[in-house]
Length: 148
Image (cartoon, helix red, strand yellow):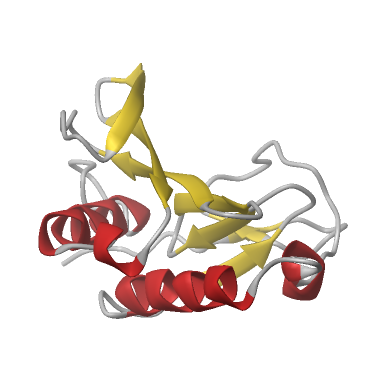
């Protein structure tokens, strides 16, 4: 039987985290500001990306000052909306060298940040969506041997 560790809630901004006293920048932001002045095609690409994330299960969408993060128990993806593309990253438990990733930062043994850009719906191909599923599992902390 697994014991689910309760999420910690920041007393200032009310954001929830898997780890107590997680460092972050408190603030309340909305999605609208991320799309101001951007073409409709970028909004549609965002909606397609979000639908791929939600295909894995429930996702918490966290608009922040400079990015939009996506969380289950922990953040597993984040994006920035630009005028002609979306740039972002997926957090994966292993390195996955793929053409979609222009950089991979290895933070720890089970924490690899894979940077990507999306310019068209075709960028969200089957291989990329399989990696989204793996990132979602990281968001659930399934990559940890004692995950809740």
